[in-house]
Image (cartoon, rainbow, N blue to C red):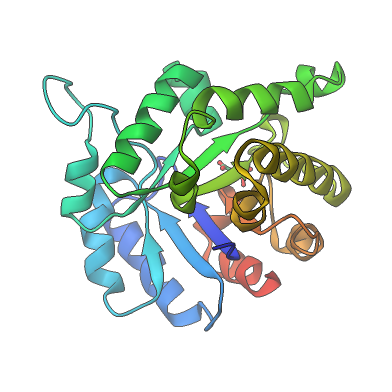
Length: 249
Ligand code: PEP
């Protein structure tokens, strides 16, 4: 079902004591809300995040996982490992995974399949680079990213998919897509998903915007009809900013 969501991607930030401190600040400050609130700490702190958050409605999600069920993949983490500590949702396809770790659409399709086969929910990230937008290729790029990684799915799989449109030029740069640019792309995404899987799927999928969302711009972006929330990087590392963004939804 289409839900409002605010998800914080902590990336490679916060050691154990910093994780505990930020979680305690969030417990004290996150308001009661109908929106889903998620945080994605680094792998090694997922277990402790669940311990600290016991009884609170902040969800703990993972930033990545490997596509194989298990085996000789030194340094990697499987779906089953995530599930065994309580993680049911995983972020896949983040632009930093694509850019720095060579994650291409075909690999991401395999990761999505593995997550779904393990009854996990996926926050699937995608978005164009600056040169794509300058060349007015951004719709074609986004369509290709979605088709390559998600359009082989069955209709019923989509109940476990959350989309996160993150124009690469807006991530960690302080540049934000204007609310109108975000709405234009989100409406396009909903249209192509509806065309491929039917309007029920298209209308029910949550589409988050990510890219320099801050307390100052969140409300305007979230007010757009097809924007169902945000994937937040830098501003998720300060409880006050993250809470202000949650309040904006
Ligand atoms: C992100 O990493 O998903 C992100 C949106 O980062 P930031 O909010 O810092 O741009």
